[in-house]
Structures are given as structure tokens and as C-alpha cells.
Length: 241
Image 1: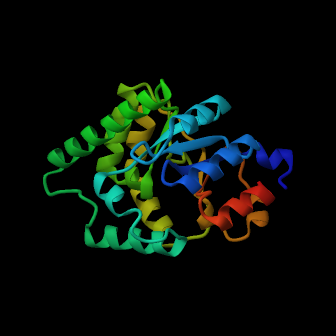
Image 2 (image 1 turned 90 degrees about the horizontal axis):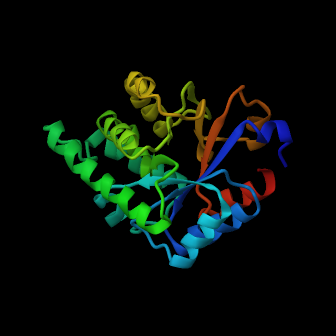
């Protein structure tokens, strides 16, 4: 179990509320235990009125977890796991499967409409605007999409975005390296926006030894994103975080 001084350096965020019945159940369980600081909600997923009321009543920060229509169509085709996520991310990036068309203006307008609709749906479900912004498979880190996310944050008075003001943490892998490069391209836009973020960002599947990692956290706040529908991550959060 983390010591108090280590826990205070972490913002523990659970992704994918709405993705499945298991994800919703595990996330609600962790929130009730005080294990989570933020929950990222997929409004195009399955969220019952009871689940929304229970989540809202906990007082945890609720972020919108943007996704695109094509992501929703395929996200349940294969069992989710860390290796699959890394392979899918790398293939999509290298082969251009993410829809960043030759005409950036038309592409960003499409994404802006889609994500704006998701914010409006979030407001209908929870009766208020999101506390922050994140995205499925980190799509908001793509520079063209990051600009859209910042514009929507400003328009809807959303104060927080997943970015990492200073850097990413964790071991290097294909996803981490690609995101670091895209983050570098968006740094100026982020700082000009004046929108808040954690000092550092890391995904739990970038962390090898969680005990060693938490004992060597830098000063400041680190957002640690996890996926509690994965049994190994759920168990780890229960035991160590």
C-alpha cells in the first residue's frame, strides 16, 4: 500500500467507464474504496441511469473520454489487452488508419462535431459539463485533434486535459514514444491555452515494477491512467494503490 506522501503525488484516473458492464462495475467499486481521483467516461458506451447516479454521487472528478465512430465500431471485436493496444496504436499511426485526411480542415470539422456531440451527451447524462478531457487510444494527442480538444475545452469551460505539463513517465514502448513525439508538437498550443493538466502523465501498462515506480515519483502531480476492466490492473490497484 502506498504511503501518504506517495499517494498525494498521484492522480489515479480510470479509463473506459461505459465500455462494458465489467468496466462500470470495477470502476464504481474502486471509487467507493477511495482508490480513484478521476473517471473517464465513454458516453457512446453503455451507462445505465443507476450507474450514472451512483458515479455522480461519489463526487469523483468526471472526465469525458473522447472516441471516434470508427473506434466504437471496432472496440469490442477483440479482447482488450496491453499487447493488442500497442499493436493497434502502432499500425494505425504508421499506416495512417486514423482519419487525418489530406484536407485537415474538413477532418477537424468532422472530429469537432463528433466530440461536441459527446460533450452534449455527457451533459444530458450527468447534468453538468465534464471536469476534464481524455480520449480512447490517446487520439486527442494527434496534433490536429489536440487543437480541436483545446477549442472544445475553452468553449465548454472544461478546465483540465490529459497532457502532462512536464513529461511522460514509465518505460519506453511504441505507444509511449509516438505519444511523446506528438506531445512535443502540441506543447506551445497547450501552454497558450492556459488549461490545467498534471505535471506528468503515465499509463499503468507503461509501468513495470509499480512499487519501484511509486517510490521514485518526481515532485508535482502525476496522472496515472488505468483500465480496471483488466483483471491484472484492477487487482494491482486494490493491492498497491
